Structure formats: C-alpha cells, structure tokens
Length: 211
Image (cartoon, rainbow, N blue to C red; front, side, top):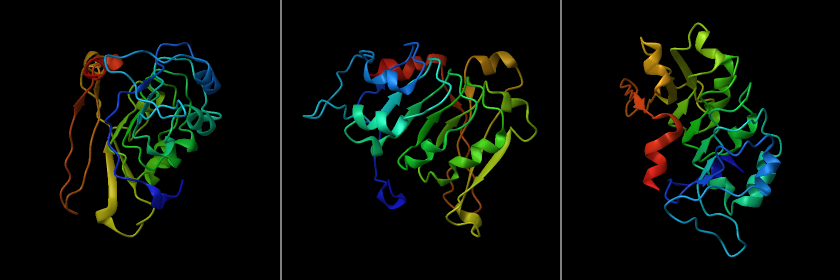
C-alpha cells in the first residue's frame, strides 16, 4: 500500500474480534471464528469482513508473521484498517508490517514484552496514528519512557510536523493497572501541544459494549 493511498477512514463497523482465543500464530485466524458482538458484522459478497477494526488482544502471539496475507483473506479492505488491538500478547518488538497500514489511527500494544523504547520510532511513518498504548511492557523501565517524541520522517526539518506521544506513568501503580494510559498529541499549531490522558478500562469493556 502506497503512502499516497491512505484514505479518510473512521471506525464505523463493529470490530472483527478474535480476543481470548488462545491464538498462537496469525494463520490461526483463518480457521478461528471471531467473537459475536451486539451488532452483526457486515461482509462483502466474497464473504470477507468490511470492518476497519481488528482485535487480537489477550492471545499468545509472539510475532506477526503472515499478517498481511491473512488480513487480505479475512478483510475486504485491509488497507483501511484504522484500529488494531494487539494488547496482552507476547510480542517483544513492533513488527514493521504494522507501518504499512497508513490509515491506522489506534494501536494497542500494552501488556506485551516490548524491550526497547527505540521500537516506537518505527511508527513515525504512520500519518494518522493518534492513540498508542504501551504500558505493561518492559520499556516502562527505560529512561525517557514518560516522554518520547516521534518525528515525522517525511518532514525531518519542520518542527511543526513533529508528532509526539506522551507516555504517562501514574504515581500509583494501581492506577496504572486499572488502565490509565497515554495519550495524545495533535498539533493544531507549531507552538500548541494538546495532550489528553485517555482512561481505558482493561479488556476494553466500554468499547465492546458500544457494539
């Protein structure tokens, strides 16, 4: 998918939800049945899902091998993915394959085993990324975790195009366990930084019941 091809997509359809399925490898998605939500999933004539959201949280994935190929088999428009949930798996790094989904705006990676804060810089190429969760990874212990900037590599010399993700650690560990997570930075001007602290209930209780 070309960087010029990203569209003005938004999460409108219910997610394709494979959470809590003990999935070990991405190929398992082809044979696994997704969870049924309150709203029915819409499918194309070919039987593929029309959703822009793919939830793979609370499984045992340690890599994303064949992610693109499998996504093409289960989604009618995988290039329109705007929300990918990979939280609570066994990922040790941020797979570069995620950087090929240029409509991605929400990426959940909390509760994994990501070791290096430098991994986050891979996501700088995603023009629409607005929400990223990383709490519950070993990188929490790295110096600089609380504030880590991502500069848009397409405009390396322009400060107004720098995008920042602020990774906040709550003073009490219990608050963090309850799901206080990052985030947000959207620059409406070069000098104005707007940060929001998003409160997410673990297992995404509110989001799931909205569907």
